[in-house]
Length: 109
Image (cartoon, rainbow, N blue to C red; front, side):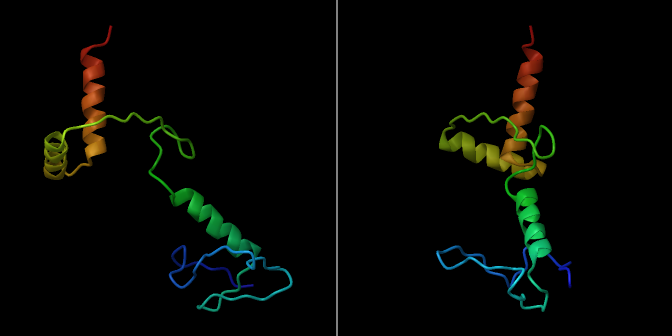
């Protein structure tokens, strides 16, 4: 059995679901374009990779969802935030988190 060790997901694998997608990996031999057999280990690695890489990194703990706060800005405020974030090498979210944390520190009871 060959285990896939390249980048995940492989560029040459297309994932699509339909009514005809059921495959018995124990009975059928299916290979990717690099010649790696697609078996249960291969599929488990693909699923684990997707679970690790989907979404943004957690600020709470690995594997845990961080709470979110959303608010609206004027177009001018958004443009200014983007420009400042770019100058500082940060994201707008990072700027917002830092500003909010500073506000909370300054106004703590």
